[in-house]
Every structure is written in structure tokens, then in C-alpha cells.
Amino acid sequence: MRKFLVILDSTTECLNAMRFAALRAHNTGGGVTILAIIPPEEFNHWIGVADIMREEARERIEAHFKVFSEMMQKEHQITPDLAIREGKAEREIIDFIQDNDDIGVLVLGAGVGKDGPGPLVTHMTRSSGTLPIPVTIVPGGMSKAALIAVT
Image 1: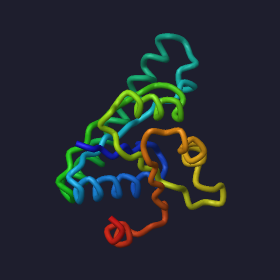
Image 2: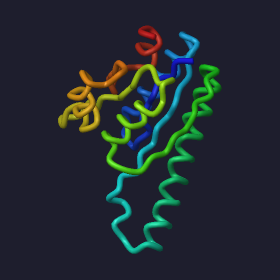
Image 3: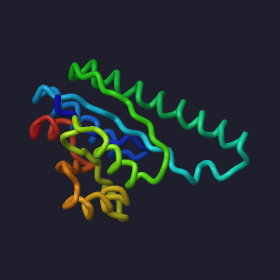
Image 4: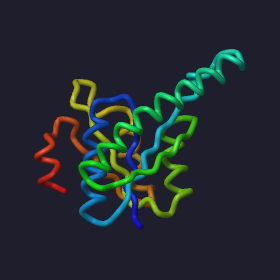
């Protein structure tokens, strides 16, 4: 089964990327994998403190995943998978794609602020020519009705 890979982060545009991935998976008989990445700079502390912070980060990720998973199941009959990695986001995404042959499309949400689409979208579009899968960029300001119409 082909899966849509979507990145779980704290941005508002993440919601549109999640919706788009769930809608496309539902409409094409695919699946969704949600990848969350814990940045390495969060753990530049003493060992004991770093372990506690790492566990707290995982708990936050799992709580956010639960919300998105319930939404996908209720609205689109999709049960997503969760993967958590630690490291630099751009490298972890590329490694995850290379390690998982069932990933067919990377779905990213683009920011709508004056700072542009966001560093992750900027980096991944620059790398898109060397990725083994297509990248779909979902505008953060797109309405739910517009998302439904294009999927």
C-alpha cells in the first residue's frame, strides 16, 4: 500500500497537510504515516535532564498524534502510523523515506506568514530533485472545502 508521509510539528499549517494526506489516502486506497522529529538541540543538557526532556517530547508527540489519528479515523476512515526520530529534520525525513519503500508521497504544509513557507518546505523543495518520491506542498491558508475539492 502506498503511504503519504506527513510531518507532525507545531506549525498551524500542519493541520492542512494532515487533512490533505488523509483525504488523498482515503480517495486512493492508501495509508498515512506521520513522522515526528525531535530536534537534537533540545537535549544539550546533563544526561538525566536530557532523558526526562526526551520522554516529555515523546509524550507531547503522542498526544498530538492521538488528536490527528482520531480525526483521520473519524472523518476519513484512515488509521495512520506514527514514527518518531531524533535529529535534524531535513536529514531524518530523507533517511526515513529511503528506509521505507511504502512511502509514496511527502506532504508538507506551507506557512502563510511573511517569513515564507517555512524552513522545512524551503529545504525539501530544494532537495526535491534528488528525492525518490514526489513532494506535495499544501498551502496553510487553504480552506477545508478547497482541500476536499482538490483531493
